[in-house]
Length: 233
Length: 233
DNA sequence: TAATTCTATTTGTAATACATATCTGATTTA
DNA sequence: TAAATCAGATATGTATTACAAATAGAATTA
Image 1 (cartoon, chains in turn orange, purple, green, red):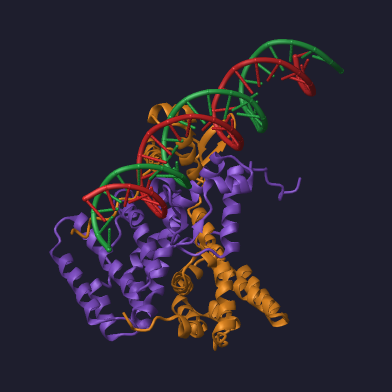
Image 2 (cartoon, rainbow over the protein chains, first blue to last red):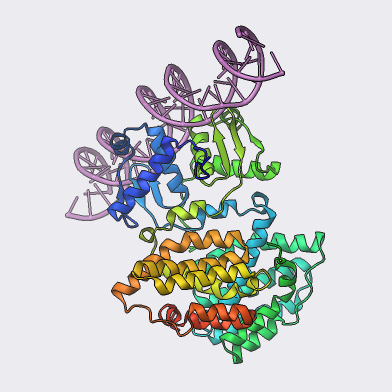
């Protein structure tokens, strides 16, 4: 038997219409704000029932690709590429392995963002980071410390000015909170790092991209110890 | 007027049912393979029409969160967190700025993945990378070179064993192909790098994670020159 | 027992009806 | 004249009904 013979997954009319709509948007080069045909027109053009058209449109609407209102019809919108993903990012829906891999991606990003920090870094940014560290020193509850820790890292993302990156990180936050708790309860808690947030700020002030990558790598050392995959393969 | 007073976006029944279903899955701690109530049961439990239930389910099905078949009903599935996102990742739907930011993320990832390479690296991996480089030398058309270039980088992702990362990269590929063409036509083409793929392999053989980050950073230098944000802010 | 046929059940699609929001333009009012 | 009000038209939102199609499981048959 050919391995390429994968089982037929029922392609419903809805699936097809969804695809045809995406194709239509692409062909017509529709931009945010552009009008989309009315349901009835689509029904007639595609030769399907309104139920099918509506189910397909409902999907595109969920993705934020289109914006639909009564009487005005549907128009193209600014899509948020992560909106669909966000719904699935509850620790609950994901396999442990996926969560771990997302955390690895986070580590990669934080080390790799180094080069995008320095060209845009301002005194204001440094002050904000200092502020977070101050708050961390005063923090009393563990929950507060966890919150401030992720805030520190959020500030770093912010400096890059990369909105997509920030959106991605914000979306992953609940996942990481979950990991933190998981590590704290079921495994040994993550050891404190030899490179503190204060150290990182110092490198930001006086170092360069390469120095920051090294510092950040050391800052995450305890996580690497836990997360890095063994050389099984 | 308060700035926080954003306009009310009509929350349809469908939106609500979608949310309630997600909540239900979470509360019940449903895992892949677990059965979901039939449409009729949901209709009765939620007090809405079947159309509404179906539109909501259609969304979850698109995300791959549930798998629905005739007669058998719906069961939880292994969600693919990127499936919704993928539909929107046509260069056409995205603003230029978003594409640029996604490319920046790619640069971050490729530099940050360094640490996940060495613990898992095998001779086999090195051989595959060598193979790609050989093919690159023999490549005649530009399209072929572009394809092999991204294949080289894909092989690197593969070594990390991080499926989520690989999935993410595969999804972004068409976008980067678009960027390559865009740079080639409308702007000056990306200059050749001083650190070649062959050099990268050498570092993989003899160096360590830090050396690889530096090499990769240099390999991407031409891209950084084009992509890095100016210190506007 | 194993293969086949039948039947009941559940989803997929279609069609219709009406509710609801809102845009347009006409009408009224100040 | 300008503003406010109202009425009608129009497109989407929801509900309901009907039937087609697939299929899991029971019943039948070899």
